[in-house]
Amino acid sequence: MSRRAKLLPSHLKVDTDVDWVQAAAEEGEGVSVGQRLRRVTLKKLVLLAGLVVIATTALAGSAYANHAWSKYHWARTSNPFYLTLGDNTRSDKLVTNWSSLLSNASNAWNASSGPSTVVRTSVGAGDGCGAQAGKVEVCSQDYGDTGWLGVAQVWIYRGGGHIAQGVVQLNDYYFKSGSTYQYNNIAERQHVVCQEVAHTFGLDHQSTNGGSLDTCMDYWHNTSAEDTRSTTPNAGDFGELSCIYDPVFNRRLVSSVVLTAFANYTHTCRGNGHLDSFNSTGATSSYFGHAKPSFARGTRVAKDEYVDHLPDGGLLVTFVTPANR
Image (cartoon, rainbow, N blue to C red; front, side, top):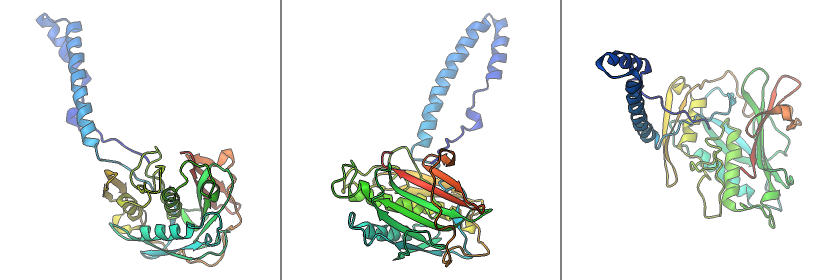
């Protein structure tokens, strides 16, 4: 998540050139330039200290958090669009509650608080862990000590930002019985599922500093099953989806107040939504379904994000949720 501090109003800026001219003028009144500049410097320090307090007070409770994932989005001719989450976790014998956690995540993302509802998800039968065009396949197994709890992948059509298909992988290694992972609890699992699914909508993280904004799109670690903060979306996430997908807010600033037991701030984003001439959801054929992320050094484009260029000019974009973040 990127944060931008508010610029100070122009009438609060210190005009250094005026100070120099005034200091030189007072030299003729028996006050040396050196004395005058020392006074000016002291005044500046007092003024700037006051401005720091003003700026800190103004920023308290505010967050500037546009968190669209680049320009990646599903093509659709109307809103809301409907996205199937294929559940391939039901046969998992190591972690048996991924399926119920996926349903929880789907319900949470469907409980939009506005300003508009642009995506509706449903959990359906999985078609295997190879990518299927027009939907998101959700899979789980013991992928080993990879360093990641979950992975979200989207395939992007050549020449644009339209998502063709998605895959979510959930790593049993850290959550199975007997795992020594420090945060092996159901709240952390819910956090991971909620976040990985949302990446396939086109959402980035709101925060990666380890603190909680009480959204599953942050990097908070849930310390126990009772620590349920950051396990669902918040108003800032729904505001961002409206910025990505709703043409009503195109070029408009959307502000969403986040007020929960654990967070109090305002999320803002600027809309760039539009409708398309086709739908990329609900397609029936695979689009490079066997392409896998290489994780090669040259493919890393940002923190925990990798981009592989596919033979036809399309992209395979991968987000990783690290175990130690």
